[in-house]
Length: 114
Image 1 (tube, rainbow, N blue to C red):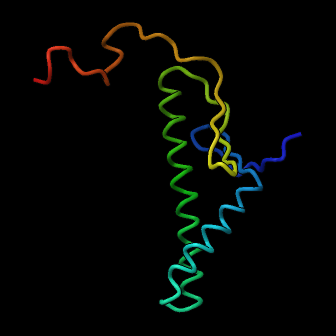
Image 2 (cartoon, helix red, strand yellow; image 1 turned 60 degrees about the horizontal axis):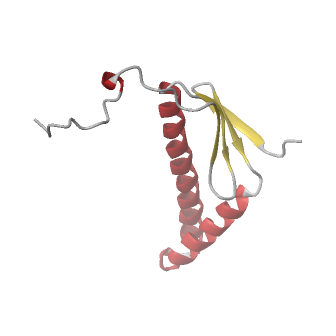
């Protein structure tokens, strides 16, 4: 039985959210809300919620980046699930071997940089 909530899909990759992720939302809101108390109560707690949602968005974009790179390397990505521990990317299979050295542009040339 799957307890995760589907919150959407980006580039054909299903996005799931574990309900316990709201613990992180609450803790981040509390942390940021208390940090900004000098701004006033409502503004401080509003800033806390906004900062917590920005944290969520940045983790989501980070994991989406991993997933898109994995797809470009031929690895099937089944879903992205944000857990209490922040993230989990479900993929199947291992990275295929490169066809040639030209397919690995991230490697530096052995002779040094031109």
